[in-house]
Image (cartoon, rainbow, N blue to C red; front, side, top):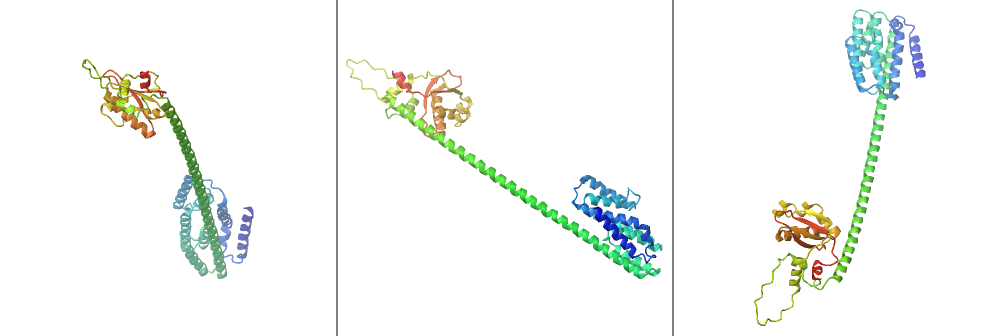
Length: 406
């Protein structure tokens, strides 16, 4: 920064020395030489600050823009020191070199000086008018109307006897300054584009990383789901093997009555038919042997479950009364519990019609979980008005019918 500042200062010194042979043109230069050097250094520092981190907040930048507008309206263009539009424009550019909201205000500031130059030129104050324009050339060389005013001022100076060579030298210096400022503006625009491309590149990298992260998470989720599915399938397979072994063992130890082709569970749902009273006869024929169906019906009426219940479920009275087909789903996990425990069921109800209906609903519910499930059930009456209860008991090693028969 120091080296650049010194070079800029030496360049300005050479420019003034080169034109020293034309004192009539340089009166205003001598008056404003120190000021113009400071302006040049400030302009250079604005563009060199592009690589610095921004220190002002967006709210502070908005306030600074408003202050610049107020200073231009109040004609505080470059004075008093510490409270003028030029210093605040320079401060804004140093804080936000790529915030181009200040550019229109810089042109407004330049147009204000062009207007002052025109007023001074009309009064014949040519040196003062040139001093105004020199400030604009250093800060905002592209200000609308600046070149026209400079041309008019040069013509006025020529008419007043100013050496035309000095005018030509001044025009050349102005052209060089315009070219320099255009180069600086182009460099700033190029840097802005580079930063935009870099930001877009970083955005794409971040998007790709996020997509890869989502892909890995989805793959991991699918892997865990497959492991869980395989675990459940193996668990179900083992359960079926155990159930088949238990059923085989149970079948081998059951009585001839239980081995009959009659479905004992369905028989249990039939009403118990009392035996008709026999009329006295002199010589009654020998009674025929009882069929397995009649025997199982009689025994089932006397069967009772004496083991401790694994769990008990209260039947919703309203669902039972309305014969709600979804009644099993309203009794919690009863169906899953029946299948998991291979439980036998005792229905405590006030009527056998309720018992039969509940047995059917529980059977259908359990077979949705395990199609091979076989419901073992029995009936225990309760007083009218009491809530119906379904009790789950441990699986029986032998049938209740066998226990009663013994």
